[in-house]
Image (cartoon, rainbow, N blue to C red):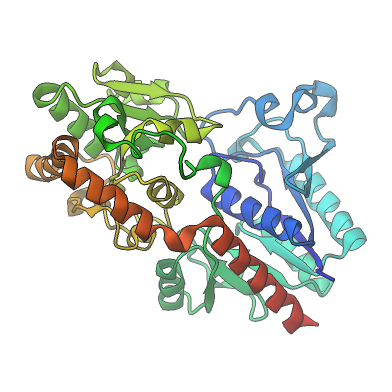
Length: 401
């Protein structure tokens, strides 16, 4: 009989702007489909730099003033979520009394449910208090490290299990913190993917010029300035190439402050974060991931390649693993990796531009790129990564028995 798995964090697990939340939630849902009893206990804090309209994520009950400080219970994908409603969706605005209430409620919940394993992430004092309490109950912890931002080895104890979405992060934390990190590949949601036989720009190469060059989550460390210069160059030399940008953690008014209002470019469409990203992939001819920082992985790269979409990407962090030999890897300037708001030089932008225009103009090159993308994405097919996740947690439970 499969066991019980719980997740705990101050950050809401239903946050679709957080790659870590999406990855852990997908793993829990896969475990639930295999018979595990899966639950989570979090707050209504989100990764966005702006306040989040929680009604769209948690329902109208989350917006009622009288429910502040109460626990909202939701079921999604076979997982029970208990969410302590805070006044603000931003962690920086968390009130001291809200933190105390969360800690006390979490400890009572752990004591009552006594799960077989607790999955967690975060190294704040509040989270470390909850993690210590779980250990005191004899509950093993599984830390999910989705990025390369942890720098304090005292967050982890010798008996903790640590997992990450890429071999890059596994090696990184072995070198920097001396951790033994197991790789847990992200489980992609089939509902986000273009299935075989479904129409899309990438599945009909002769129609690619009717599609877009897509860029997700325009943030400085994601390569915002390189994208901006590339779109500007295309507007002068190739106005027939259209770009699509989907907002993530940064709203348009912030881009305007930085004088990078991508939505004002005549060849660029800026749209809000999309709940149904499959519609975006269906209109995407090429995906750009010009990241400047050490990506832990890149769900969008694996998703795009499973849809047959060619990817032009930097090789930072776990991006090479996500590409897996598919796509086109281009360099980014060292200055941009150090200062994310720095603009890349003309030579770098031209190299990215030439690869893009080749895919746009050459039928054979584009068709070969789509075929290579699908082959490269095979290890990330949802059924394979879901089976691997179930196998990992079965082994963890068996080893603790």
